[in-house]
Image 1 (cartoon, helix red, strand yellow):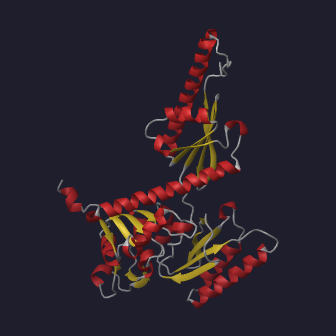
Image 2 (tube, rainbow, N blue to C red):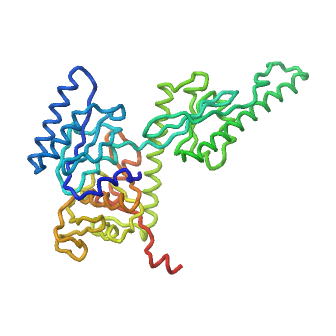
Image 3 (cartoon, helix red, strand yellow):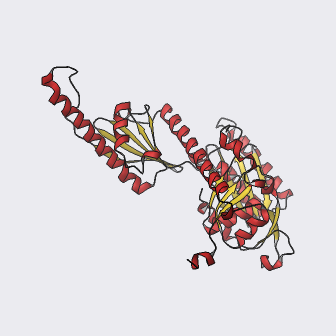
Length: 383
């Protein structure tokens, strides 16, 4: 997961109001429920020390009518009387409302709640061609068509030797159309950088297309019988197939990153002191976070700049700030990752996730925080 969308949060000093809220189902009581939630949030923030202007900004944001992208929930981040970021939540929070006033924005919950769906390139296939569609966390859009030969399309089903040339012509037509579709998928992938390619249609047609995809795309391709081109649109069963493939992709990615972490001890760090040092040196290439790990809540000290971190307040040589403040370790390290362009991988043990990934993540990394490191500058210069 890339955190560049969080950059606006780190262009202001704070302190911050951070709210994660379950929007609930829309019904006749929605307005009343929303107002009660907004008031409770503002009361909680006020008790924690938030200023009135920021409280009002949060209240107004929560009372505004959300757009359709806020179906599961929303997060609101505000400071100095202004809402800076209001991202949608793709997953409902485990608690109805979480409101915090803290030195840094509390962004850690976004690792599991914000939209992080892989980009899916869907091909609705038949013997004439395919309609292409791209699905991203921001929505769905059409991505063109592929057209093959239109004759001959159908064999006679007879065993007469005289029909063999015609049957061969049908086979050639199917092969040609599959090749055209595969080429169109590959060209579209070059533009959108899809994480998954979903082939929807009859088994023979999608198998022919799969076999003619470039080798680089085949590991990313999944097949489904639901939502073929003749239906003209996605179906509920297709949506379920894509969601299943998306979850599998996320699990596989987590497995791969854990394997990298375990296999390269000389290029990794775990534990708050080691990670703080790596963040100061801008050496974190990918931050691994197990949200329920005890180290995520550990207190560290931070200055205004993302690389001003220290385990203890007395480490003034690292803080470089006359007035350092305490912050959660996960939020401090996520700020550093966002600003330095490091990737972040959540190793969530969500109750609904009973995969091996959740089980093997329980003790890796130790404390719940770890990182894959960039090579030191001196090593690169010495090559």
